[in-house]
Length: 259
Image (cartoon, rainbow, N blue to C red; front, side, top):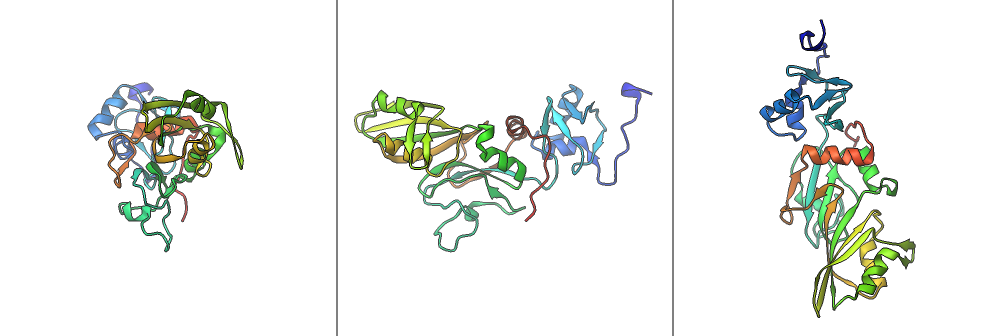
């Protein structure tokens, strides 16, 4: 028998229905994921999935629209809107407030990179060590977008310096894009996009062109946007966001980090 007449392949005892796996991975209700499967948009390895299929989440590769998605039940992906005054650490007895105070119960996760204490905005947390490593490595060029506020009217020449490059104590730095969002006599707000995660890089670049930061908010990491996430709150990443993070970093599967 072939095609739709073929029974789904036998799976080990750890198998579960594909609908459950996709729903847990952030693709909506089981009814929603049935639509994806019926449309032929889901594969298990090289094979187009069918309703009734089972997978072993700890072993099988599952793809939606040809993008691999993490289905291991122990994996966790969160987005936090870090308020100012909170330290990006899970353990620091000297910190008045840390991100550990804001995280929900569940498997332990780790911050992907850092935001300094006075900065705010999007912080990703996960126990997917392979993804975390690639998101932080300059080789993969994952964009980080910031909204920076500075005092005074910032001229175009200073903005252009950010993209042409400035010299910092640890070497040259430049933004991929930079542009004024709001201009005034006493305040300028600008968007800055970087692909590096060097310590306090945005603050140091703006100080180098004569406009120290008065407020700094990270609004985006790759495809993940801060959106309407309220300060101090956490949301799980959607399946499409995680799949896009996998795509831009070239990952095809992952398991939770130990520890």
